[in-house]
Amino acid sequence: MSVSPRDVQHVARLAELAVDDADLPALTAQMDRIVSFVAQLSELGDLDGVASYLAGPERTPLREDVVRPAELARTPAAIAPEFVDGFFVVPKIGAMEES
Amino acid sequence: MSVRAAALETGGRLAEADRKGLNAVLAWSPEALDREAARVDALPAKGLLHGIPVALKDNIVTTEQPSTCGSRILEGYVSPFNATVVDRLRAAGAMVACKSNLDEFAMGSSTEHSAYGRVRHPMDPERVPGGSSGGSAALVASGVVPMALGSETGGSVRQPASFCGVVGVKPTYGRVSRYGLVAFGSSLDCISTFGRTVAEAERLLAVISGPDPRDATTVERPPLEPVPAPASLAGVTIGLPREYFPDDLDPGVRAACRRAIDRMKELGAAIVEVALPHSRYAVPTYYIIAPAEAAANLARFDGARYGARKSVDGDVRALYRATRGQGFGAEVRRRILVGTYVLSAGYHDAYYNRAQAARMRIVEDFTGAFASGVDLLFTPTCPTPAFKAGEKTSDPVAMYLADIFVCPASLAGVPAMSLPIGRSEGLPVGGQLIAPYFQEARMLSVAGTLERHLDAAAEVR
Image 1 (tube, each protein chain N blue to C red):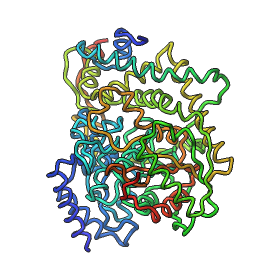
Image 2: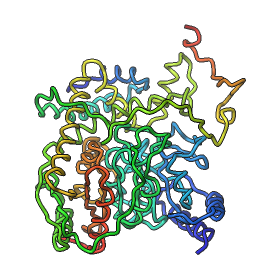
Image 3: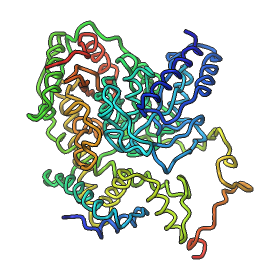
Image 4: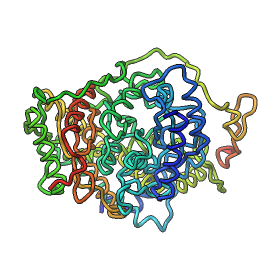
């Protein structure tokens, strides 16, 4: 098996995703199945020097950086839980506030 | 028929679909339809889609209805702006009929991965309609709406179109604005169209295509100009990629393809065999690139920027983890984890960089085939007709392989479509046409000719 429960816990931490211990064995098996499946690209041999893929048939051109107004159906004050003096007010969040 | 009468009838069909348990719709109301009819009546001129009700996949944002992406994490979310495609549809006189069900964040091939329950196949409720745009496909197939929008990342319109027996068209990457499409895989995502006929799917694409200053990836080309379907296919060369007709292809799918190929030949097309040798690597390539991009795009759903916040004791990371862990369903969690894995230090070269190189090989296969004188490629859209619900949910890789014939065109960014070409044991079978970049009009005109000369409702053996 190429993916271990520890690997799953590690990437879950990187991805900021809670994984229940009870789900870990099945998730590890599924991840291993997927990673083993995609590893078949190793059959393609040496791919050094192959140009990098850039999305789209016509490369995205550089454009002037112009600020455009976004017309919103509702104002930020109507969308946000709290909006005061042009600022979004968010709840105080644990360690971030203290650090 | 007046627009208001059309709105009323659409409401009746939506209510009937609800009663039958199709589960294809996430949001609609008679009041909203009535408002849409009044708005269309007030337009100064009749547009291309005057009074036509159109369903929108629920990852296309609207200000009038919630946009959930089929996820609990966005339950009740209402966008403060409309997607560009919505503005264009409405300007052309269309009515937004409803928001349609989908695999959560468009990740799936069966529409079984919606937090709001699976969508039933319109002809057999035990089967799936395909996915991820299964709600839109089912609504068109069951006659609730004549047209619908879906989105493709790796075949999510062509595959359900094939399963449900309707037409699905994916344009060239960059042909249609994605402003207001909730991002999944940004190098792949394309808003795409469904119709009962080739002409309807084409008309919808003509309305929504064209550059958009709000989406820097749209190409500076004018909107699609539909071309009438020719009487014959003389002068057209159709390539059959041998890798798309494997020995284990479903016999009914093979027979339907054979009949369609024979019909194109009778209509004057030259048929040649071609090779796309790297297409066999398309699914593994896709399942590295798409999850990697998804892991980045879905980082914003953390309870602070987007998403229904879960209150927890602890620091901000505990809040993120709880919000995301509880808000995302199993398939989305799996893809975020796989995407994070293939991008992580130590694995990036072996997986992500390798997949990018494999993707170039797939692109080169297509450009090589078209450069050899082939106008269009023809393949089956899917290896089988619609499968039964639950048949593939325990094995993610088996589910991924349902997209084996549709993934390559998505990776290459070329236009492709599915049209019904017959039935196998009562279930629809789709044939796929793939075209060079920006050759949608030619692809659709050939499809229109084939459609006219093929009884797609006939059982083929």
